[in-house]
Image (tube, rainbow, N blue to C red; front, side, top):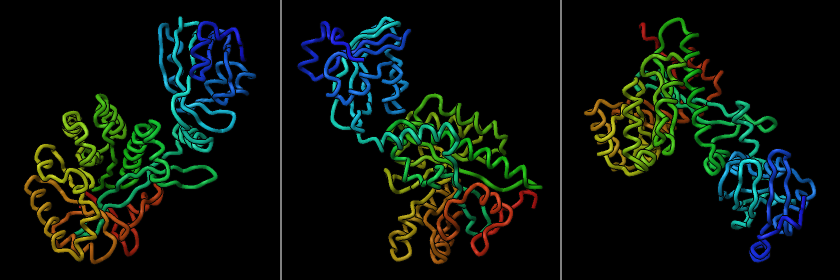
Length: 386
């Protein structure tokens, strides 16, 4: 609640900066605000009182950061706070604590951080990750020679209750902006490994089938990423090479040294590396020499352009020749017609991926495609036993 006495020595700063003096007692969950709470949209909060009410006003990704106030010593933290007017504001808490109490200032720290609807969406995503609503759908990757199903790329989807299936473009920007991208990626990779394991277990023989899943620049640069990925793959008891890790050119070059260490570590433990969207980033064939990639995925731009552009066909042929010299396989992305499929096959690509075969399939539909294929689109996965 508002306590004018809490202003104390902060009176001049509060008046000058439009700030609030804040006193928090952790043992009794007390909250005292000194100053004009309405200036930060906290009139109702000043009447409610309570540290936990303050925490509940924060964006989900920011709530754990409030725990820094429980530490003894000075602190300075920037947060997003929901006001009574449903606007989300940036605020800054600066002060000192002793582990039991915290005293300091809450200052405005920039413009609007959005509206209530944005915060509700972020809250829903945080809860979705906890509830397992963020899942993997699977786009088929097809052998261009036999037209048999060779594998899948796992793609993030949000099965949101009351709304339906949301594509990655509908929630991944939010995940990226607020620090959930690693949680989404880890969930999709773990599910992909488990689903592939289940498909193998349900099949009477050994399947010639793989699944790939993506990792971002921040993930492949993290020191513990390789250990966490290998733990998920090993827990699924997959055959060597069954799970492949995809990284893009651009992501690899954010921190090439860290990426190289991570990619080498997982590859040495039987996880092949796929270079995604080749041609959209730094576009240097020298990347194929520095990094030990096992598969190169040609960006769909080249596939579409190659139907009418001789230069694009020449680029594809060059990449295929160089990849072959390094023992790498080539996937053509964006195969959307029989003509594109025939062209990619004739140019030497090993696999095709695109809407000609299917959009991303729900796990149960992907499981059916493994054993039955998709009528007129592709054949079932092949058995390693013949």
